[in-house]
Image 1 (spheres, rainbow, N blue to C red):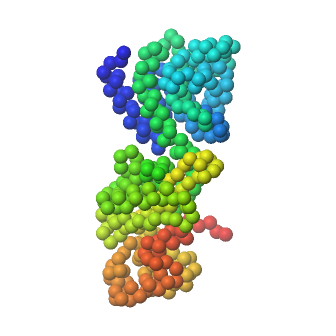
Image 2 (image 1 turned 90 degrees about the vertical axis):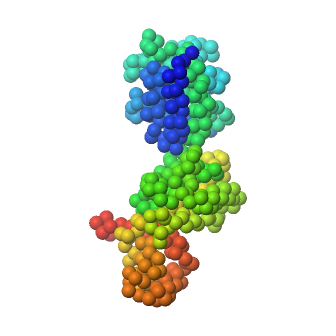
Image 3 (image 1 turned 30 degrees about the horizontal axis):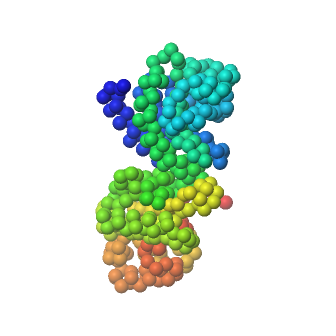
Length: 390
């Protein structure tokens, strides 16, 4: 049995695991916490992929005792050289077992090549673990390593791990697309960070699966977009929140994703004359990496406050804008209203309206939203000292 204090600690840990589902960098700390509660030296979670074995390395989480340079050797020895982990998935779900006992139950009495390496590397001489999910595609196991003469008691850990097991199952289910999408789109998201474009991938429920730093920065401002319960992307304004939820639900169910998107204008509370521009497009894998199982939405957001230092000369020349049209275009990118543009440029409101209509006609857009989106697609906001001579 466990004390009320121990129960409280495990209850604190569970929501922390859910945070790690979309922020994999948190796994090490969370597993350190679990290892401390169990009084074992380490805690490791591995996904063994039956369909796409090359993905397994992206589904490996360990606490701080496993240095990155030791992961390859750990996987090679631990999964293939008789530590018991290759048998844990044959046990009932959440049945916590000692590695050697499971090996022997399955008729494996050969000397282990893993345990000598483990003791030399970490001082541990035993392994124990349990399966937390399994299907035709693969299985997830939680493994701990310890000394048989140390403070860790497998029998005492059984009830505690059975308690958190179902939560780990759900967390890892949420975590899987994060690993796959980050691996696939990681470089793409890094580039968009440098372009100051916020990008997030949402699942069909609107929950954030992957997010880049620029989108995180916009969310942290809590100006228009925010993160709601269950890591769901939503908006401060109730009407905007409903529009966003409806758009995500509609797009994630699209049978044909070509030329389908939703564009939302989310008003800023900081600057009433400006707005965040949110594009939503269907994202679906019918074949390939996700096996046709992922359906969601790609969300891109533009923060108008970040466009004051963009050099638009190239785009202006491309569309043959006049000097006045260029000034109006630049003012639109800075989020100014027509009246503010007129005051800023010393022009009459009708002149500004006429010049803006000319900009729309030359660039082939219908409104401010499309004009800013065009700028995002075509302009790379490099400062002069970042330009590499050709």
